[in-house]
Amino acid sequence: MTYNILIAGVGGQGTLLASKLMGKVFLERGYDIKVSEVHGMSQRGGSVVTYVRYGEKVDSAVIDKGEADMLISFELLEAARWMSYLKPDGVIITNTQKMNPMPVITGQAKYPEDIITKIKQSGIKTITLDALKLAGEAGSARSVNVVLLGVAAKYLGLDRSVWEDAIKTTVPAKTVDVNLKAFGLGYSVKED
Image 1: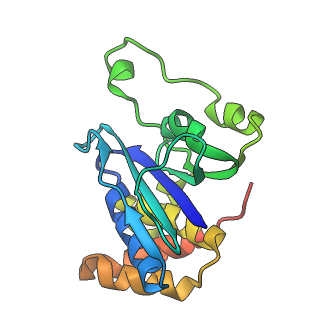
Image 2: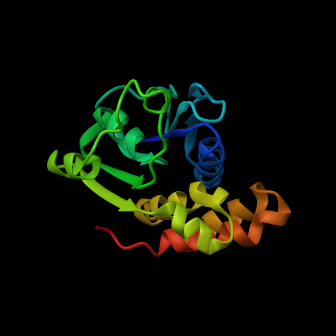
């Protein structure tokens, strides 16, 4: 069996670090792991998605529509944009932060309203949180990615210490404490 995780965000939010940490954890647990390269515009502000697939044997890093077990969305509109990739029994973990895409910034479009309501009305299990607020409580707004990773880690059921060890050996030494606190705050989030 292969488990498929799609991580969607905006350039500069740390989707690559989140997928790197996941890859490290699953590899250390003995899984075959495939992590995709970035799809989208990775410069700050562009839409970015990475795929993480793990299991006994994984042939490809690509996740097609209807195949993802989990969608971790760093920005609200990205949750709506990528939810068609989820399996019917999949789960969305989404930050409630809104970042205006270029068409909204230029006035050519409006940011969609009631995204969370629409997602929940679709019947998809959805966990929402203000990850930016929790990251601030941890000491750095840049740790939104690790807050979301904490939520996902609890849901995935692997031992918390494995994730914390991966954080300690992956993030820059000066950011370890902030990232561990961010992870813990995400890990303690209650489901909606």
